[in-house]
Length: 162
Image (cartoon, rainbow, N blue to C red; front, side, top):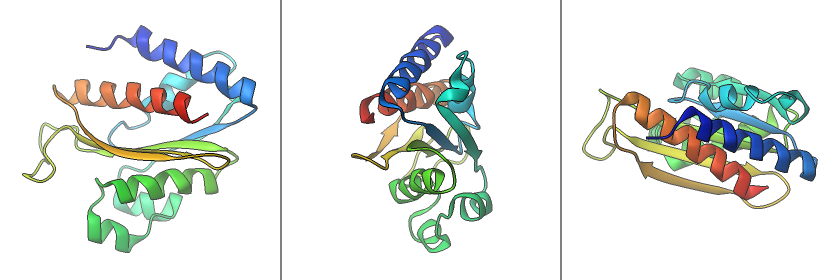
């Protein structure tokens, strides 16, 4: 599906754009488990434009580390646009970053429901100086495929909101 080179190329472009714009990025990841941060830190010199990553796999981590409201998780579920948006905002608020991406999803093979099947991923991109975007996606494939597609889309979205 997507090769590591494609993800690495996107991370390289992201770094160039962040450097030009003099912006710094952070990530808040659940189902990707730090995959976006890994892709970013594969790029030499990324410490100039990447501040930190929050791997908030549990609900408690989302609440404690990046200020997601427990009431929002309870009302909409951890895999929701509302939670992803709060994750992205919280990543910027709790870091030295200007922009962030947040990902929460169901990579599978278990955990899906009729309303949120395996492959459901919510991604939010937040730019403290500009516009933001949050959307839900339904990726296909196995756990690795879903995670790779989410990582690739997260990088693309970061490039777009700079």
